Length: 350
Ligand code: KG4
Ligand code: ZN
Image (cartoon, rainbow, N blue to C red; front, side, top):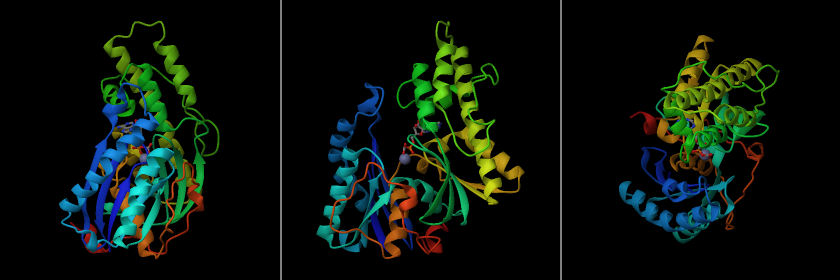
C-alpha cells in the first residue's frame, strides 16, 4: 500500500510518499520561519495563506521524486488536528479533494500520533508496549502506549510545554524565533551550575510538569544585568539543564511506575542533543532502552503523518467525505490498531 501524506498544522508545509513494502520514497518540507520571524512567533493567518501557496507544489515534488503517479496511490493522509485551525483546514481541504479526485480513501491523522509513531521509520523500531515522552512546542506528555492507537496519558504539563519554555526564555535572551534550537546552541558555550534555575515539580510525586516559572526566573537573571556573551551562554545552559533534568527524572519515574523497559522520545524538543545524551545514559543505566526518531523527523514533518495514516488505512480505517479539522483532539479518544508496525520488514531494512 502506498500513501501520500500532508502536514500543515503549524508553520511547516510538508508532503511525503510512503510505501508499506519499499519504505519512505520521498519527503519534502517548506519551513515558514522567515515569514514569521519579524513577529517573534507564528501568525496563524499568514501561516494558512502560505500553506495554500506551498502544499500543491510540494505534492507535485514528492510524487515526482517517488516516481509515483496518482494511480499508484492507495490513500491520502493529512494532519486533521490538533493545531491552528486555519492551517489545518488548508491541508485537510487539499488532501480530501485529491483523494476524492483520485478515488482513494482519505485519513485524518492526529498530529501527536504522528510524532509518537515517527520512530517506526527507523530500522530498529521500538517494540510495544512502551512509555513515550512527547515534547513539542505545544505539548509535554508522558504516555503509556500499549499499541498503535492505544494511548493513556500518565502526566502532562500544567502550563507551558517544554518547547514553549525553550522558546520563551530564548526570547528573553534576545534570540530570534524559533528560539529552542538557538538556545540549545548557545548553551553549548555555557558553564553548568552558574545559574541554578528551578526544576519545577521534581520534589513532588507524580508525573506532571510545570515550566512557566522558568520564564520569571530567567527574567530576574537577565534584568538590570550587564549581559556579556559568556553570561548569556551561562543562562542558556542553566535553562537547558533545568528542562532536561526535569524531563529525565519524570521519564525514569514513568518507567518505574508502569514497569515498562522501553522509552520512546519524540516531538520537536527530542531533537535536543543534551536531552538525548542524558536520557540515553540514564535509561541505559537502568537496563531499559530508549528510541528516538532521526533528528529530521523529531520536528514537524509529513513522513510521520504518512506512518500514522498508513497504519490506519491498512487497518481498514478511513474518513467520510467530510473535511476534518480539529483545533483540539484528545489523543486518548483514538481507536486502537491491531498491527504493531505499518511497514513490512523490507521497508526499513535499508
Ligand atoms: O514538534 P514541533 O516541531 O512542533 C510542534 O508540534 O509543536 O516542536 C517545535 C518545538 C519548538 O518549541 C522548538 O523550539 C523546539 O521544538 N525545538 C527544540 C530543539 N529543536 C526544536 N528545543 C530544544 N532544542 C532543540 N534542539
Ligand atoms: Zn509537532
